[in-house]
Image (cartoon, rainbow, N blue to C red):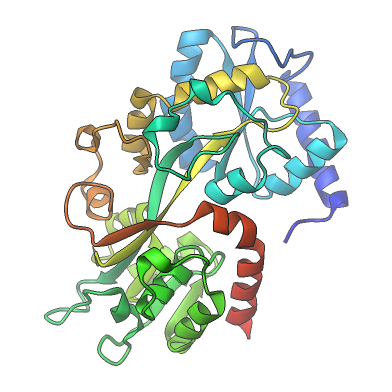
Length: 357
């Protein structure tokens, strides 16, 4: 739920004060190109993800242009950005965001860009907006504990719902239904190419058949712990997270029957103090060399189809759960960003109410 404007405004005030103290955006010319005097404020997810972005995107861009970066992290970044834009006090230059948010807020919270500078023809249809071109992609995979299920093992998304044949707790991230609703509908007989518009009620009804066997993890860290400690023996979760969980000690194996995927993007907020330089930085980040480096660091997969994925040095676990590499990975479909942009709030509300109901 979006925080109140009072809370958001207070947080923005802290951001403004911090940014001013660092000198970022002070007296900046939004139309100026990146140069040694430019400090680009980059909003990202924090932790290891930010370190990966520094190494893959920011440090090479600094070497090329002299521009430097001030990295900030906010869990409620859309709410804060709403307040910044409404007050005409935007202090961020680049925002790392999800597919449906890039679609949902293009032209209102995010600046339009000159798409001729970006690899529009190198990415899947439906993933481009007037404000963004996708950067990396990831999937929601079905995986099970191979130390628990031997001999007769899951081979279909339907097996996630077969607690008689495959007893044991299933764990999913409780914070979002993306990818989970799609899997439930396919398991209930909906053809993958006819998923959208999603029938949320039907998906929840299918999930309801095994609700007592589902653990709704409050975070991906908690989900990981459930699997490592064998409190759960199956999951539907992000492909990159599965690689981390396997490397943490859970004997997970993917089921390549039905998988859905999503992507992220870099956007420029409305009123960004260094808008031109930010667009330069994003265009640079979307070049093959930078995306390849980021993929090797993060385990995420470049969206560009002209990058030979066999040249990306993924980890062993990263390869195991990556449905975009060569091989038979069953049916892999895009989580429709247009549908999610229009319906995410309503779907999330129903998902949350169903969990506690």
